[in-house]
Length: 306
Image 1 (cartoon, rainbow, N blue to C red):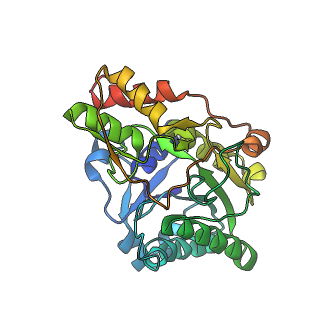
Image 2 (cartoon, rainbow, N blue to C red):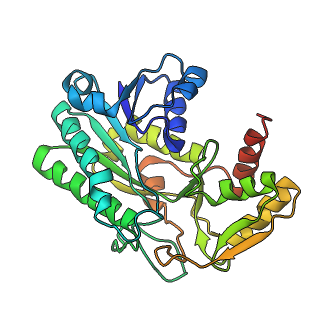
């Protein structure tokens, strides 16, 4: 059995469905599982509230061969003036689950953030995993602390773990308004309202179709000899400015999307494009879907065409 923490969140939904298609048995762990989604897409997938699991963890963890951590209570924009909130919200439950995974001998796959842990870098080349971690936001700080906690448990408790650093996932069900440029653009197009653009549109991001990310997670679990103890970037390796993404959205929707320009956020790096050489070499994974194709799939899904 595979436990998916955050299994009905944006990324968790895709992980759950991908694992089920591959024949794996998965259980959703969430503070508040989205039961309507499960009833429609995975009616036989068990769902357990996090507080119930914490009250009686051993019977569940004893059955788990793997634990995927795709949960989170914050976004890159969260807690700009309250960095002390990040550990309590995200780090403490992760370390609790990772410790139980260590006791059970389960393989932990932790989703960090390639978009936030590296911080501000020159706008050239691709970012490698050995780049020093210098996050600018409390969210990125929390991810860095989580990675350090996992590495500690690997040394102290024998935790079997893999850390993945995804870039900027995009796809269906990305409904959180606090993150996701593509979703915000399409919402603006449907509502005929301006798109709130932070800065001048020159910020460059590495957009990754969430289906490619789900496949990387599944391949990580299926090949523990290649993945245990590894830290991998997971991205497209291609950079696109927000202005470029805005233009693509206009072509896909067939609408002009006016822009409401707002000040850039100090905690947002101006350039993030990931080097994925390591995961390509070690695991044989690489992104397969281009940005325009991925955005078109999101628009078609939201329009009820898929």
